[in-house]
Amino acid sequence: MERIIKIYRDPLELSYAIADELIKILNDAALRGGHINIALSGGNTPRTLFATIGNNYSKNINWKSADFFWSDERCVPPDSPESNYKLAKETFLDKIKMPAKHIHRIKGEQNPEEEAERYSAEVRNKTASALGVPRFDVIFLGIGEDGHTASIFPGDERVLTSNKICEVAIHPSTLQKRITLTLHTINNARKIFFMATGISKAEIVAEALNNPGNPLVPSSMVNPHSGEIYWFLDNEAASSLSQLA
Ligand code: 6PG
Image (cartoon, rainbow, N blue to C red; front, side):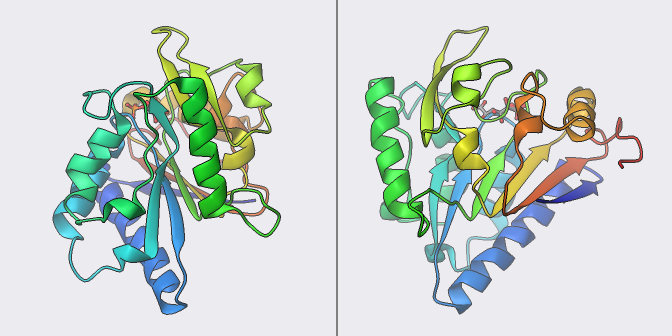
């Protein structure tokens, strides 16, 4: 696993840098007549990225070379303000006029256990490698202050050790049900794009980067076995990083 840490002045500069990386991947795919599968992250951090792409990269980009999925979703309706899909749709996918057939949302309004099965089948059908295991080209991830990523929460052994494509998880404080890609799926990706901004993430980012493989910090368990992991950080989120080994 190759780890690349990129640090930027602020969320806007970080967003342009990620957008440029994504466009490069898209163009490479388009040049070889290929296709890429991207899983988007949720929460607030991607807002600036989605708006940057939606407002500045809607024309002359090979967006139809991509299909969009989600790393996780809250079990809420698609029009809920908590929906990760709603955020991406309104700020990004609608702006680039992404056809619905390229968008594979997790249906948070459905029965969680049934939807986890349905979404897993859709992910398998669209992204399975020759070995039949889902292999995303890019998975975006955020990191919570408690070290969670996607909806893989600290100490959730069931989800952390699952060999399924995705699982139903429960947020430890709100008890909200979530559907999340598992580490098993995440660690089979070609590229992981972690994004973290703001001083509130500084300590947990340093912890995750300095002490990999800790189940109490699920973000530190992301370790793509044959892929690259990029950490896109702004100065504040990177401010506790000592000289990394
Ligand atoms: C979610 C995300 C979650 C998020 C982190 C960081 O559904 O909330 O998938 O893993 O990325 O909690 O959230 P913020 O970007 O809001 O800090």
